[in-house]
Amino acid sequence: MNKECEICGAAFVAKQERRKLCDKCQKNPAQARVRMEKAIKRSKSRLGELPHQQYHNNECEYCEQDFVSYGYKRKFCSPACRKQHAVENALCRKCGKPLFPLGIIIEGTWGYCSDTCKTASAYDRAKEQGRVRQCYECGKEFVSKNHTQAYCNASCYRAYKDKEIASRPVPAAPAIVTAICEVCGARFERHKNATQYTCGVNCRKIRADRKRQTAKEVGKSAAKRSS
Image 1 (cartoon, rainbow, N blue to C red):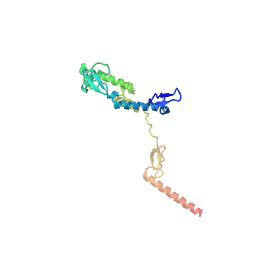
Image 2 (cartoon, helix red, strand yellow; image 1 turned 45 degrees about the horizontal axis):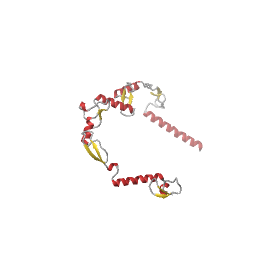
Image 3 (spheres, rainbow, N blue to C red; image 1 turned 30 degrees about the horizontal axis):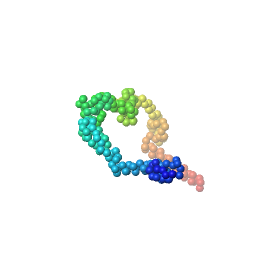
Image 4 (cartoon, one colour; image 1 turned 120 degrees about the horizontal axis):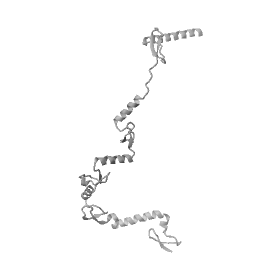
């Protein structure tokens, strides 16, 4: 039974009546369809039949003059018309009021009719982004500049830190006791937990010399007993 392939259009002999694709397309129908679409696009490109290869008749939305564009339909005949149309039809981003009658000239499509609208719009955007926070000190809402800012200004930060420092417990005074020097017998002050046995540097050296001398004598005595 002679049939025509539904994808590539090639003639083939079908062994079954329900067969719709040739042997080549039957192996991978999805890949065959992609391959055929690319081939059709290449053929149209050679013939200049693709949409971006056509000439289109247009009417400028600003000056209402007819002009011809190549490739795609266009709204304006020139960059000057596009820019002037944007200037004359610009709206306030917050309240939607036309800006051109107010004498406000902007480059883009959106702008602000007043500083109030500009501030309110910035606040709304910050609220959507989660940057509107409450000051830890005064409780007033503010727009944070980063994810770690917790105070609305430096004054609130200093006030909070002063309160924190004032609320800290005052450290207790160190426990001082009076001790007697083991060398000269003079009285001196030291911390109750300190291991200080002398009143000064000289006495500490004398005590160390005595300990070394005692250790030598003990060593000699032990040597005599062992011999």
